[in-house]
Image (cartoon, rainbow, N blue to C red; front, side, top):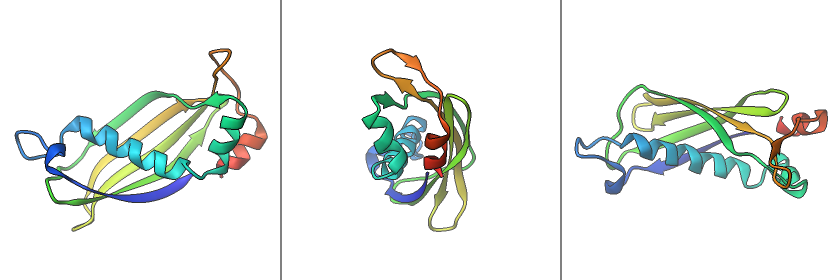
Amino acid sequence: MKGEIEIKVRGYHVDIFSHVNNARYMEFLEEARWAVAENHPFVNEIIKMGYSLPVVNVNINFINEAGMGEILIVKTGLKGAGNKSITLSQKIFRKSDGIQVIDADVTFVLLDIKKGKAVELDDNLKKMLG
């Protein structure tokens, strides 16, 4: 799972200090994950199987600021897969100067929706992750 999107910082993304509000970064990261997931064979397969991927942990390092009007590049890639979990690495950069703004790791668990329990990632699913 790998991809990259651009997001333009709008007025409603910034706080009273004219910086992107920290909560908005979570939305930017989610938007990028959806862009990657929409057509990924892994995601399509787990949906068919009756599974979902709820977020169970997010670690974000706020490195630099971004302001209104800036274009941000959000890069998403697979960091690793455990027995029942998947961790994506996400990084946000200012397009204008390439400076990194955010470094985040987002961990999901593979969940059987009907049973409400985490299930193991089999070899086939791990292979689909790429």
